[in-house]
Amino acid sequence: MRRATITLIAATLLCATGAAPQEDPDIAAILKQIKGKEDRPASEVFHNVKLLQDLSATRLLRTMDGFNRALGTSCDYCHVDDRWEADDKRPKRAAREMLVMTRGINEQLGKMTEIDESEASVQCVTCHRAHVKPAEGIR
Ligand code: HEC
Ligand code: HEC
Image (cartoon, rainbow, N blue to C red; front, side):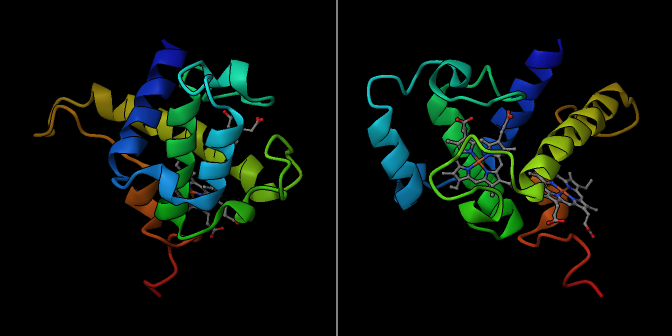
């Protein structure tokens, strides 16, 4: 159940992204490195995937592209150059906490009976709107 929900959230994140992730040079480089394993679970292909382990490697990379778009960042906001598995940067660790929070919100949304939309969901972009701090641009 827990895994299924996270996969669902990740799938929802994808919908918000649109363009092919191959356009990002980092993603293109990683796709080259993992050639032949793109459709395997991210947990097998990568080294330190704790929440998005059930996504295919390609879908994990698309989700990363979605993070960039949702937050208005580039990969290095969360990642150390060429050490994608490293958890050194606080924003990467925060993003994991945000994934858990987003899952919790979506579980609550799923229990609501008085909203019109049966598939209602919250994604990173719902709050962030291309800002690292959601309140930026409002104040
Ligand atoms: C907002 C923060 C954030 C941004 C921006 C981001 N990532 Fe990530 N990335 C994460 C988190 C968090 C994980 C670990 C997910 C998990 O544990 O399930 C991760 C995992 C990964 C992994 C798996 C590494 C391994 O071996 O475990 C790769 C590869 C990756 N990201 C590539 C990228 C690329 C390429 C970009 C830019 C297009 C990017 N990321 C942008 C947060 C981010
Ligand atoms: C319900 C609203 C909401 C959702 C949904 C949400 N966030 Fe956040 N996020 C916040 C708030 C609020 C902060 C704290 C901003 C601050 O420090 O002022 C934050 C902070 C962060 C930070 C830390 C920024 C920094 O450098 O301090 C990261 C990274 C982040 N969010 C990533 C994500 C990702 C990735 C998702 C989707 C999986 C997501 N968020 C979904 C509201 C949200």
